[in-house]
Length: 355
Ligand code: UDP
Ligand code: MG
Image 1 (cartoon, rainbow, N blue to C red):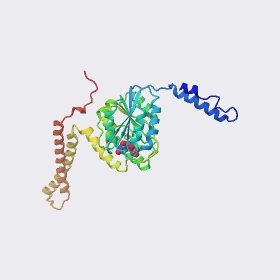
Image 2 (tube, helix red, strand yellow; image 1 turned 120 degrees about the vertical axis):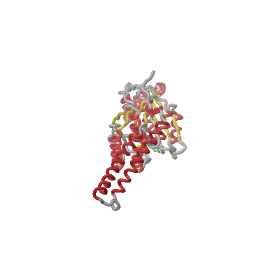
Image 3 (tube, protein in one colour; image 1 turned 30 degrees about the vertical axis):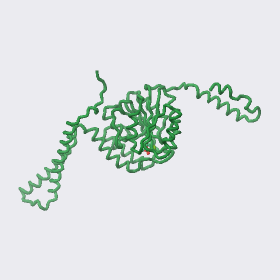
Image 4 (cartoon, protein in one colour; image 1 turned 90 degrees about the vertical axis):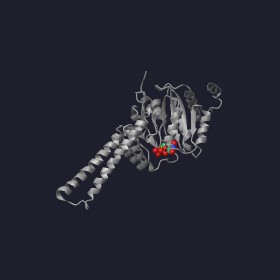
């Protein structure tokens, strides 16, 4: 660099008279080129040896190079080593070629490419196995998540949290998505008891043990904070910058809303009741059959004491149905308990310390 500057033409190419603007611009350029090469004085200190930036992507060819450039720019202001891992989730455009080009020029860039599209959860799940950093940041590839938030997420982890989730407080998405998502986040918060505003933000930071202990399958990437919280990890959130999609279009249609709710039931069941199914099914069974018995008791009372015929009373069917359904709930609960008893899985326990 110095050599380049030494050799760089000084007075010779600078017009002696007239074009002042050219002269100043050149001087400014050289001054700044010099500055970029010097280590920045404002290095952000984080308590992390190596951070892995994990990026799942599907057909995001236009965004990849600007995203990479922005990440590198930000990450050089942090005092830790890094790697960038692109997980190509079966893209059919030029995404993979572009990633390969980037990886050729930078050995901190790695990539995995799926043969077909398996979904964002699968991409994250596989990527989590591949990371080598002690902290991990996930972010979307479409430039909606801002790499400038990387240091903020890491600094929040340093406050003692195991996972930090981004909160797109000011969100640039279509109206319907914004509001359906708000409702969905509210319900998830109430049902799971976790007090964060944005469960499905692509931008998140994790300490390594979190990603080693959660199982993101199906489309459960929407519920990672719930999965982490259930395992006993400390989860929090910070407000992050969000941008409108610059290129391409969203990969999740309106079906996300319906799938999301089915997944919520799965998550709540697998996190809360997987080791004690009878607490859920027994409870449901008890109340259903109790209601059935009350209805049938009332009908029996009226038949015995007031001789009211049962043949024209639709309530009779409801009473019978509730008792049968209640017994079925009980039976499912008992079967669940047998399965838990026989197939206990010690991997479910996260060990904090041992000697
Ligand atoms: N994505 C993926 N596999 C999929 C769908 C999406 O890897 O099957 C990636 C996508 O390329 C992007 C991120 O997941 O990097 C979030 O997707 P998108 O921006 O479409 O979701 P939205 O922001 O609309 O919720
Ligand atoms: Mg997006």
